[in-house]
Image (tube, rainbow over all chains, first blue to last red):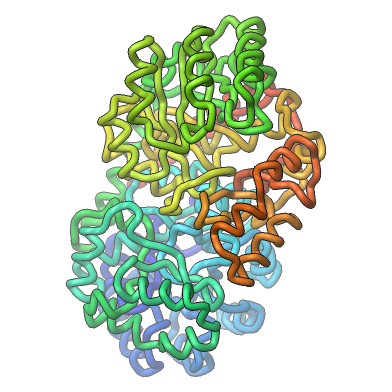
Length: 317
Length: 317
């Protein structure tokens, strides 16, 4: 393949995208990843418009290389966010959590590259029709908000690959270089990595949360809140509280009111590991060190190439 | 690596195992896969002891090559089943759905190779301690009975690889040769394939069910009955009925009584696509043809080698 569809599209060195993550990926992480040859993404989901503006400006001051902004399309101040993105000459936008029909043409007219995050074949096809440049295919194992079909990375990638012609960026469960190679073998053009970058020096996540990611084991996360918007998080006290509400037969509306929006900030940004919501992927069980983003990228490349070398002797006949 | 741990262990040509599946994998499918160079498995889960005996004998008449029997350890007639396996000189046993502590030493003493199916790191470590020869690591995307941690193939394989020294056979989501290669890149020694072999001429599954597998799309299966024993099945009328019972707050015991055991046979063996239980994996969405088992194996090999060749051009630097 010698596949360069994503590196050409974004004008980056490696097909490695750092996921836009609330309370984790500000300008520090995004610029560090971009400076290391990947694509850094500022996660606008947890930022007021003015804060986002500041992060874009600082990111531009910190790197000459391309970076992107991730915008959840259900964001209440979406118009303001889009105006800031255009006004500050952001070149790449990743949209998620919503319908890309309205904003894709708006951004494309301004010469901005648009990528939409999907978790099913159906929505990937729709996004392609609307004219996005690529899709992120996010599997069930991914942290944070997730799809209703519960399709995993291992099955979603080959099915999406068959269904669309635009480049496919695999996301969910990718924490080392072997996994990037595996995703490409399954048909992906590039990999988006979230959880591994939460445990980085540059992530704005609270130190206690980063340490929790490092300590966690296989089986420590679960997808819940399926009736509202499915989200994968650590099984902490807050998670158990949600499970308790389910067992009592609490209604959707009650759940919503009870939970509020502040729990994610409280957990991931303020470090309240019991009462806060800790969004993270299944692959956290494999991660055992907090590292600088530059070293994470370097390790991913090294592991990728080593995994490839090891497969050379392999032939079935 | 030129990894031959599984092919040496079983004395087979390819690191391809056909999953033992209720109402699908009798002697016809198992012998066809073994004759094609993989390891065929008779699924004892849906067989009375006398029926199993017949299948073992017919399989031995149909192939000179190794094959295995899969035994769910919660099977009511487990003693009889094990006696038949020993008496008829079966060389390899895959155990699942239960604790391998009792039966592993029994089988090993008779010189039988033992593999246990797990879906978590914790149970893989236990199985290794007990002395099994290998584990099957079954991800959340797999059809039929499944684990409570909901860990996917993409994340389970690297975590298991790190946790145990015995060979790891990846299962769940593997429907083509690219996926076998991807599983090996993630750390697996071999692949176990179920769903792809349901849509084979030799599977004893009802023709209508095979056709349903071919027609199905991404998102058409779901894991349910989590309080009893989690099981992945097609979203048919029977599935909707279960969801309805959940919404009414039906108890575990009521669920059990209501469902009974006959639904799986009715769906998969008798072809009642509405009222029957149709156990199948997520990768059914990728499968679009009913083929002879020999051709399925041949295609897997061809796809594997092609994917490997394409990977060679790939280098990150």
